[in-house]
Image (tube, rainbow, N blue to C red; front, side, top):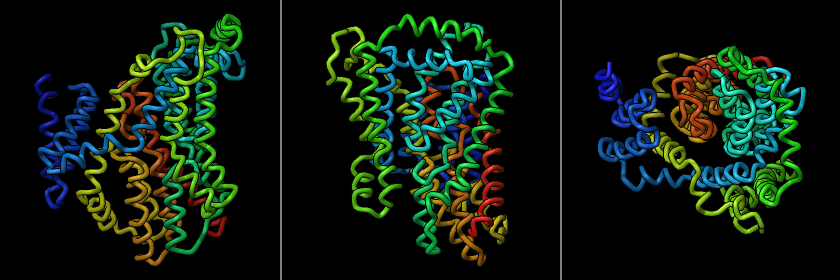
Length: 473
């Protein structure tokens, strides 16, 4: 058995290389297949696997060194770093404990383990509608860990459910146009191809029902998989109330963490609100989008932690404390970005998409929408949702126009589907963040993620099919 595990990456590499023989990017695909097997079998630490896969892209697939390792400088990496430092400040100052005790002391949130899961899903989704899902998950991770510490130690599989709800709740927030980059890409491409400019209200008319259904689906799946042996959360209410009283008034370190998070939060939402209020083509809205991306907001907030005065030297964040963030997760996601970029630059992603379109023979609007939505979900497991949307939306519009049908539904299917890949630690930044907690084995993430992927496909396709015709789209 041990020999099979050791040979499995080589077997996966060879099989993928043989299956992808007709394509120029077959070596990239083979490296990716071997990397996924290493992640699943956990033969190496995940961060080391990510670094090794990037090296393999250079050695085996011939990707230029600067291009391959340049993925570790992607803008999402400083977003990770800034968000992790902010989260570390919440942890060291015990601000996360205060938030956790505050939530656990509410009867509506702790009536049962199921109620707690739903409360976390609704809260993370609501915030993620207007704030980066990466930032939302990073903010809630220490709060979730504090909540689990308030429950009894014999928690069974329940911590997995709590952690996955943090990432799923943040990721399914597709209800507003500004919620995630694929939404904005779809709006621009649809207007370019058809002249139709979807309004904020039109997007919410189909986006919010899909978001609500996905939150409920995530809750039901996690409740079914991980809620059976959950500890009684009602017992935690008394503990939380007592701990909240023990914390007393807000301490200087907590105040600093709250201010830093408040500034970062404001900078995260100001560009999106400017787009909504002023319009996407307004000069001020464009300037804010260009000059205040999510990564800059996170770093500005993190920098404030070192500037704001704090008399309590034990709780004041220092660079030594800041370096204790999970760098392994950052490297893991950097490796995932490198693999995704290699699939696009080699043409493999495009070739596989065109092959699927030809093989399916899809020629009706809903057959094309089903095909490209499934492709977006699958591709988003391998690359960022933005990369998946950038590649597939033009392809979806081309397929629809070639078949003589409206490209609006297929383009929207790609945009929504690109945000609904949940299987791997590298599928989304929120997945990587909760994986860093050490509470979610990759096999459990894959097991649960497959279920939500399937539900996401059905909900997206069904939601668009039911609502778009009623909007005249």
